[in-house]
Length: 257
Image (cartoon, rainbow, N blue to C red; front, side):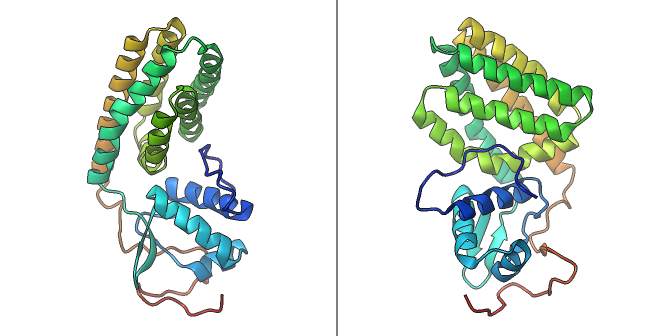
């Protein structure tokens, strides 16, 4: 399944298009937890399943490691990064000031009108998803809305910092949207208020709204996460297909490159 999650991928020409396609696909599976936290990613199995050579796969895995979605340990291989309350708190303690700053910065721009239109389109999709009881679609639309906010804020340094937080935070955001029925309506109300403030050029108001939104989302996400202590299994075994052989950590299959 190709990635349906909008995101900012690397544009470095050193990475092949096939590696970037693979990166998007793996990101989607990790963010939606189709590849569970702690699952081991074995190169030979991934190559066989996705019909891809090892070179683009390894490029994709290196990019995933840089974004914090996978971890690599000598002799233990590559695993989907665990999801922990501690990591959630680290991510959201950074998101609170940075997301709110992005909203305030955009509101102060004299050229914000086009960005406001794009934000409003994303909000409309969120509202439609909520009316149709489709939290996954609502999540997707909200991800695109935050992308627009980051991209259009007018501060490339801030946008870069937010990009570093976005991918690892998406796993927790996706979890909350599916587990907390109040998450989507909360996001709709707050983002509607944010867009109104940005349209009016009211930077302090936009900043306060987003700060409160991210703080409340942090609380809801934390509650959903703690309520499912057995969701995480650091010894999880990735099963790509019914015939996948079972092997323990530290025993990689030896295959030619």
